[in-house]
Length: 281
Image (cartoon, rainbow, N blue to C red; front, side):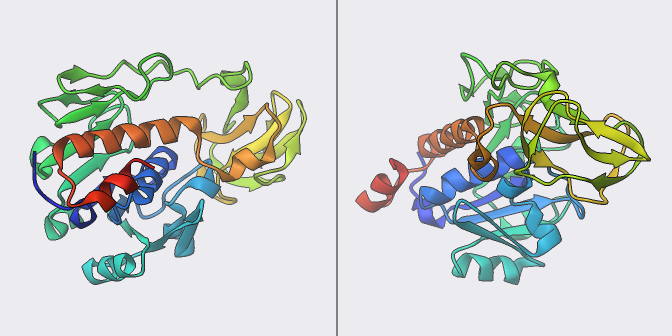
């Protein structure tokens, strides 16, 4: 086990989407504050109110009281940390990895395949979901498939294959996810948090309507004018009807965050009782 204070660990996330953001928030709450998240130059998110990647578009994003800021370069990353914030960088080629010399790399892109992560990028490399082999591509794989094994740490082998079926919420799976009917910019008629009825139009792409298939609350929606492609997931309806869920991290993301924290604690020692208390919250 490495003897290094948890608060001094540098953690680099590949991706700052919904699941990555939930994991980062969990680590931040456990007093691991030197977090930087690397994203594309124009990231797309559905659950935008709980996704730190929105800082790339809006310069800042707050999720459950934790603020992330867009950072351009190493010095701005350090300034974000000094201010008690998560740094988010537009760095699709992960060039910042070399400069930051991370103790931990978390591949949370959830691309269902390995886009280039390797086990030598940091002393501890953690990958979420299918597409990685623990012991070859990374040190630990975290199971992301809902069910009995959700959040399980895999130290040898791979996660379960992607089912292609959205998680079951309120008895609905595919019906709650809306996809683009064409190529073109998304024109929104509704906004996140709105109540929608089955058959109601929530927006348009290429002049074609995007129609709700169930009743519920619009929990997620891509940014207006985002260039959609046919078949792209662009909205998420929550049939439970509770608008508060639009603004809070999901159960799945929290579970994955706890698993990543476990993997870190298994590798790194703590420096004092304060760190122990913080990490057990």
